Length: 89
Image (cartoon, rainbow, N blue to C red; front, side, top):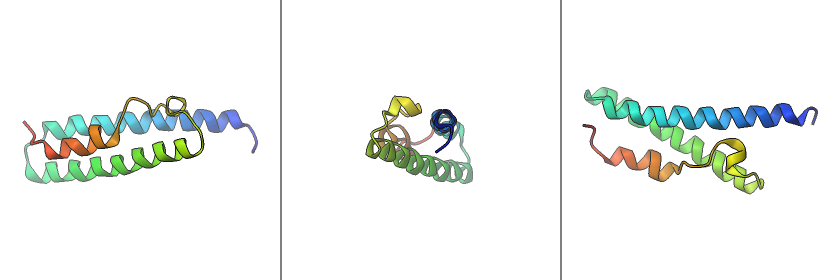
């Protein structure tokens, strides 16, 4: 592989952005009152749950620290999937 730093920077930024977007989706879901909007955001959050879980599993499988990809501090089951069980305000 050429220029490993380029890949490291890409993956670092990608991890942070995916985490940021996932948490923003949870916040946005909490603001929704319309059943169709709630349903949309629940599906959107489930997609992020799958991606965050996969990225974390792969990082661990390759011996990469979660903090090196900005994937630390979020647990997909706790922070994403569990919010779907809570009614919106």
